[in-house]
Length: 492
Image (tube, rainbow, N blue to C red):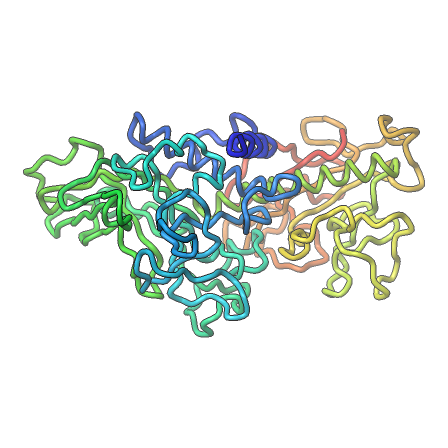
């Protein structure tokens, strides 16, 4: 029953942010083969997305997944669970090292010792933690290959990128010089992203945040005994693309079960060819071709888009709750607050700026006279510096001098923010995304965006959103390389 409730809550959280159609198949990193593998991978991928979308109260369901963008750790063979040492579908809250022997003690995430550069977060899908109770009927040794294997980027552990927000998109890999990834901050990140390749070795992405791999039935040399449990080599396969391969191709040997990648090389996986598509006479591959793995992936860009949309909805919900109590919305935090000590604090009379997510201090030159909005937000909002990625707009007749007559009434006057489609709104939250620092630049700036900044065009990307009038782009505006604004209507 608990697992069923977990699945329901996860699905509900997913619908809150994505809607039933928004996700579609756009997070697929290559179309999976039809049949059982397609449905299992899609279900697993949706569950991971739901988990990161659900990382706001009251939907926090998985230990360690405590803010949008976090992912659960894999299920490992962990002796800490006591005998028998089996896969149990539980996220371990820890990852392994490249030198780890399957069944040995894991490396705890976080803590004063930090995380070693040899960290490898690669195990099986934590299906029980995700509420996917249908896998309970599968034997722990999974003889048919029904449970996906799961790799998550070590960048997303709870001690590596401490402030997880869209700023991670503009980071570059820094060699692991300190030995403790919690000391590495933007614009650097401690690990490469995961690499995914097509059946002939061509690069699909080198920015994967998570990869799900569904093994097929055991091939030559693979055994899956009930005891002792085996590691990924008994499930996942190896492909050699030969030097005589038909172009385009990248010759080399690709091993989906490899765990001991060098510290300066990210985990790498290959999509196997569809069944029956590689004849024994094909010179592009070493024969016999024994590979039946199917995979999908989620890039860090896609994961952060989901997280940002969820945070926008979360803040909008908190603003609605504030209005229900006070009958007005709070003022904003002005962009002119460039000093970290005051940035994000509410100032009286400010109608457009950052979300007022930080409590007022004595350094604030014009503190608001109304109740603090900052107390409405959970700690992860400021810990992960989300306040630097959300622009808040409210109309004057929805603020303290013009309260509504009741919680169900509209604000006092007739003014309003207008979306480009003509719909009136009383308050908006716009996710600003990562700064667009390379061409094609945002139309609003026509140059590299920099932050923190007192200029709205360093946050929002269209002329419509930055021209100072009361019209803004609608929530349905399409994203592209020069536009990443995500509008959420707080109150129509």
